Image (cartoon, rainbow over all chains, first blue to last red; front, side, top):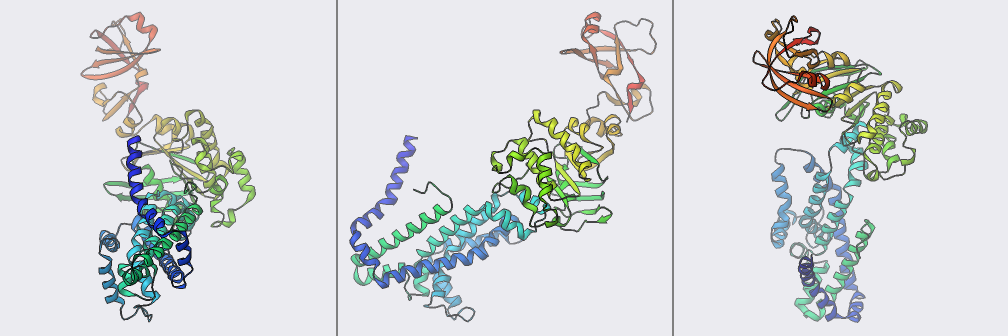
Length: 245
Length: 323
């Protein structure tokens, strides 16, 4: 156990050290000052908001998809699962190019290039697999006989999905949604190709870094990380994980 | 009330073969079979979980293509499948929104009292014992107002001390609620205690069905007799009978050391002697057949038998069952 503890501590240090270095280098005063800049907070708000919308859309569509994959055998299932995982594997810039080629002329009458819609599409395309796979694994763990019993008690498949299945896979779905949301707010490669403007936080950090250098980009990065961490902890606490701290 | 006609179903390599069954209102039917004989699959097919060939009728109406939720058939699985995100009362009242006609507080009170679960209503189902879970699962199924109750090995999760109490309870349910109960198990004792009617399911086919005593005491086929643990199964020719197979009750065989002028004795060789607390288990060779019989300790001590010795046996014909 001591060896495990030491090895774990080594990894945790490796993960935390860059963050500590960032916050130490920026300092609290600069952090608060940057947070008051309109360009920064609107950019961060836009990032959080669009990633949240992407999560909402996939909750509505990807959770049923995860259920179908977990419960049913059908032709092309393996291919479908591979397709879902593709965005995780491809370079994000390549995904951005693909999205630009597919939706460059618009989607259902909506402009995509350099619009919030385009940003949301890019975020969703690259992060949806996290939520779909989490939901799929959650449903797969659940004994199908819960559904059979619920139906003998009068519930239709649609009704029992909400009353029996979703409450039991809630943690998997919340964790998947969190993973998707965090992956969305960190998305840069695809977003920068499909919509440089309006600037989401990762694009703003990159823009400031290339235009003005580290002293101007580091505080934005620190603010972004701090706010993301706060949202993460709040959601985990609300989901009943009392040991979040 | 429940009638199953020529039900067939194939899942993977396993097949339920042309099963027909009928259970009347208030009747308790036990289907006895080995593990893997298709008992659970049969219950699931009746409940509508699998698509099947054949017909299922409830109160004279065909329900074969009706969805599960519209059948009014309750199901209690071996693993009970209580919903872990709900407490005991929420589990029992799960059907309230879907079957408002049965959502009756007095029905809940009656079940709570019958099943002695009043003190459990607010408990988390994960904290219940096997017997408590069992009673909650039965209450949940009955509360939804079923016309047929299917029980899949319902006593397997209950410790032996609580079994008799739950068996008594189960036995009373069919008459009290005027429902047909179909209970599957591999346990003979459970089946004998509970069943009004019984069927033996082996390798996906019902090999015999009928009144409990008739099925348990007079198996009609070699397969059923072997499954029910009948001993000394031989070809009828062993005793000069024309029947293809016979089974001889070990208690119907008497063993003598000497001929003593008694009629109808068969010469045999004592092969093996086994001690079993209050009696001895003896194996003799009769014309090449290995015959099993029991002997009380006092008789055995008097005869002073030894393995390999010649002896004589007498078979009471009342103990010979023609298969």
